[in-house]
Amino acid sequence: MSRKNLKSVAAALTPAAEKLPTQNVQPVRQATPETPAPAEPLVQFSFGLKKSQRKELHRLAADVDMTTRAFILNALKEKGLSISEDDLLDQRRSNHL
Image 1: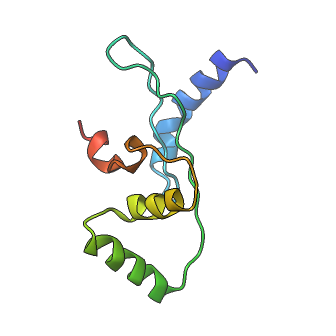
Image 2: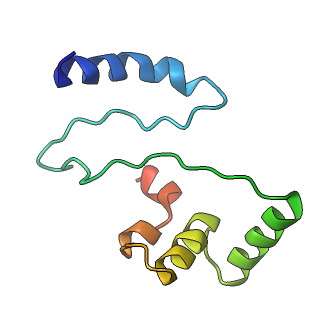
């Protein structure tokens, strides 16, 4: 299947997938001069924590006024993962602009 066909399939399936409770679907966006295509797409990554650890993680992030995502990325950055300042931005706010 060609890249063009995959984009049309993704665009056609996005509305249905957004209604599913387990999906975190990013809408398919066409690049324009005003909004260039992102350099690299975001992918979901998950792992399990004990409930008490999850609560502690949220508290630790809140204590330093960070989202949990940014807190985790910052910790991974300290361990050597390549993380830019843009990666630490709150993704929820950028989706509403």
